[in-house]
Length: 599
Image 1 (tube, rainbow, N blue to C red):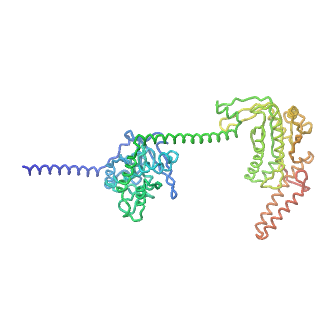
Image 2: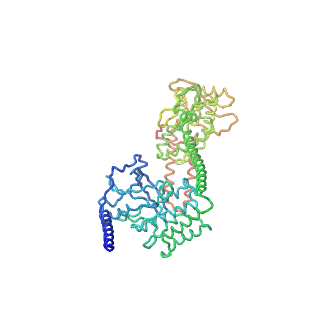
Image 3: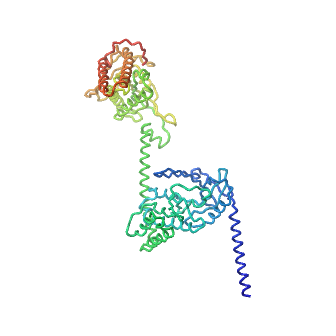
């Protein structure tokens, strides 16, 4: 009877094992995808696809992470590029083995899903990203708060536990272990991912496995650890992981035991778990305050940079009004002074210059003008081609000072042009005409895209006419401006030009501004009225002579031997001197010119 009972029990157990193994074999042969309706991609595109750039000294890799929602959890969808979803027997066995892996330090595999874009594996998602990202992010995870000795031990211990479990499972090896395949969840627990699925995934570059069947845990040394008396054992263990002899390297079980002892020593210290937690919270709070201060400083610096750019485009009061209310009401000003200037012969200069040379020429001139404008209570309205427009008395009213500041600025600009030289046409004089007028004006911001602070009124037109009817290297000033200057204590010097016809205004009495008593502006000598027409023709001739001289110099430098290069360099200088013997601004060339010039 005992024998019979024993036989029956053994047979029953054998039958149960047989049924279970048969069921397991059948399950391994079958594989079904997760229903796509159960997986919903996150609607926000920024949350759906995340580009994680990881830069290495040897390579730059860009990972694309797709996030979705499955079973009320955020999961990571990893594309199985080498598969169409019809898995063979080997692949089904691997997937079933991967599905049975369930460990705290390994990411969970939920199955596969088939979309129109391809076949994807559904994996547990690490909220804080990969380990390399956490280690490189010194702002969110500073050294003094997170990267202390206990945290480093915990990271290595998590990796060792995960790899020990993986080696004892049917997966046996990882094959692609590196810091980008270790993810960190929201509780700062490190979990290993990207294991298994060898039939789908090719071996990655940069893996840290040793040259033997059981991978060596070199990954534990991804962090620099400071040698200390209390951690000598761990330090020596890490050194042994880098041993050149593979047989001397410890496996992950030994690493796990060593790190476990270190963790136990840390936890068995006088500090309790609660004290440790409070200490970490205090450290995190201090770091958070420092981080907020740092981010606030960065924000203020960026805000100041943006404000500086806005103040360069629009007047200060206008920028403040736009920031506070979003609108700027147009305003009428009883009395302002407006400055206009343009380059005499600009069309001719452009005719003999390349587009880039024209840009460089205007940039050099206007940079000089802008530096002068900064020293006066004026506002640069705009530049249109070679025209330069400045106003004073708006948007901030300044009494009678608007005429004084504009006239002093005009004298400074004229003195600057007396010494200005063109880079591409050395020796060619550059003349400007300046017109100044005072009167009422309306101003406001026009447009929403690239808004401009524009001036309107007859004063603007008259100032423009004062410029166009002026002479080179002269400051043409209207009578209203002279009357304002006479109301101030400043002693400006001027001479009457006489009656001048202004289009739309008729005949007006105008003046030439020549200086200010007690100030030495070193103004260039202007040409006389009688010589103005001949100066117009002479400009084209001087440009042609300069271009011809530059062309000869270029040809001679190509043909001349290097030893004679110094002599050639002296020739152009002598040529310049001979050319300079011709009159510059006031002395006219004696050669007849047949080229017509439009100014």
